[in-house]
Length: 190
Length: 190
Image 1 (cartoon, rainbow over the protein chains, first blue to last red):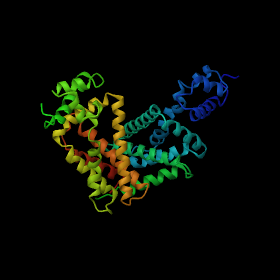
Image 2 (image 1 turned 30 degrees about the horizontal axis):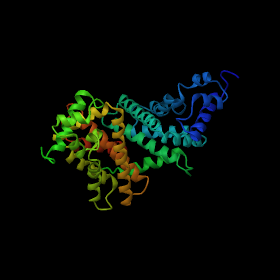
Image 3 (image 1 turned 180 degrees about the vertical axis):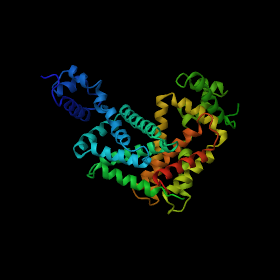
Image 4 (image 1 turned 135 degrees about the vertical axis):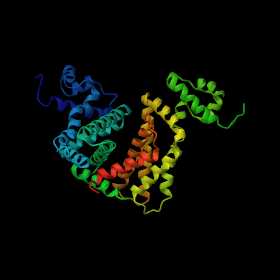
């Protein structure tokens, strides 16, 4: 079979997720994933460092999805507007086609303490990066950290709702509802 | 020695923390803590289920510190006002006298992955409880969850600053600064 067959990476991800879901993450070996995806283990390791990375690949893309759109804004953009832009950009990534995969992935992650910790680490890294980015754009403390932490909280809550059973609204609509709720809660002058 | 000597619990906590800090959490046994505090192991176990609980005792008190003041407010109190009240109440608990202990405790927790996870679990439980409490008081979703998550985020960031090296301001002042920063971010130009 071709060494760089198009779609191999995606097939490995889908196959791995099916095995994790059906027989458990800990019980699944790289050899089984490779066999089920009809590639060699060597090919698996060309795409992923280990089986955990099948679920956490693309960390740089994940961070860039939020930081990219903020970097494209004028420096004097208010931080909450910057966060809203980042969430809209995330909405373009988390489209309807990705929802079944995201649901299945989350179910695997939720069942495994080490994967849950890795997932929390991913969100913690995002908070740090967003805080650094806002500070580098002139947002003072504590506003930069508060904006970054609040933005990631809204992202996380929106994502959880987006993958909830029966949810059909777009990620962008769900995130907008949460940003609006935050705006309504936080009363100026009280 | 007296079986219920006053101050035994506090002495066990202080002694344990000193040992954790000087020789490492994993390297410290209950026997050593008891010996250093001049009590029997049996006495230690009357106060704490295990050595980890020396650092995490009083979870119910911790949760009640936030929920108690909210429960005392009229039902129609806006959620952000309720959160502010909870943070002011936390400020009364985290007074200057507790700061050295909190600093030393955090340093031990930060160095141990299992303790860090337990600490995150404590904050996650607080988020769930606050969300439930606000919903039970008639705050709709997603406002209740957003208010709870944001409140715990502000608490956590304020606490980190309160124990930062050289910080001398009160917890209440630090939390107020962060709540005001959040208000300014969400409602710029007001």
